Amino acid sequence: MDTNYTTPAHSVLPLTDPDNIWSNGTSNGSHCPDSEAWDWLYTMQPVYMAVLSVLGIMGNVFVLVVFCFHKKPCTVAEIYLSNLAAADLLLLSCLPFWAANVANNFNWQFGGLMCRLVNAGIKMNMYGSIHFLVLVSGDRYVALVHAMSHGRMRRPRYAKLSCLAVWSLGLLLSMPTLNFRQVRYLAQYNVTACIIEYPSLEVEFACDAILLLLGFVAPLAAISYCTYRIVRALHGQRVERFNAENTERKATFLVLAVLLAFLLCWIPFHLLTIVDILYRLGMVGGCALDQALDICSQLFTYLAFSNSLLNPILYVIVGKNFRKKVYELGKQISLIRKKAGSTKSQLSTLKTFASN
Image (tube, rainbow, N blue to C red):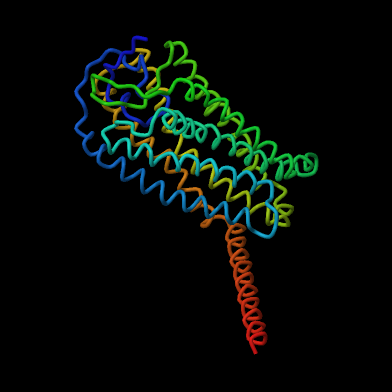
């Protein structure tokens, strides 16, 4: 396969859309000078991704521990939010590999299998996160707008099946990454890189179209509709009913905060993906745009990945029910420790009597 690697700078970095990096056909033929900001970006990328991974993993593990080990079973919304935390944890577990890769001047050291798995994990997060948010916004929509007529839909069993369907969809949509990612030596750059090689431009743009349609446009439309109806319900004529259902309101405010954070973090990324596709098709061009794509592809990727760290923070700041669960879980752990201490005391007393 003849692959063109005379690409602009933004197409030879391991970020942006993980499946549009080091790919064939990503240049419109321009030869623009590299941006002066690259040295700073190369220096900051490994540090940023390492810090993001450590803090994000700690935060999302904490969220999962609270949801999974609390004495009360999870509500439907909490099932969706715990799966969102698991998707974020998957992404954050993959970032250290890319941090090491950037620090090593983009020489991939972890073999072909990890090249595929790491990038597939990132892609599964991209699809999974937004679809879990579709589920959680749909749950809030049913809870507040159609509580009487469709309340049966809000059952934990159905929620778990829906989450399984989202994970299966994410795995299916990540198959091109698993299939086309591989480790190759690039003589032009003197690196052995983890790249994606599509069999044709048609396949490449088909994958881009699927990402935008199923990973952004369609889920965004569903989230926007549900959010609009939720906000109307919260401020509508039935406020008295919602005041009586204070738990539902608290859960809804947390969900709205998580949705807003996700959109603020990911919309710039997807808009830039659209511009990058137009650039690669030759419909737009110029060195100014080339350098803007260079810088924005990095900054918007940082912003998108930061969402995985923001969610646990939002649970603590906005989620009153979550803070209550944390407090109750703390009491559970304290009681267990007291019982364990009492048992040890009794055993030591029995041993003393036995020795006498």
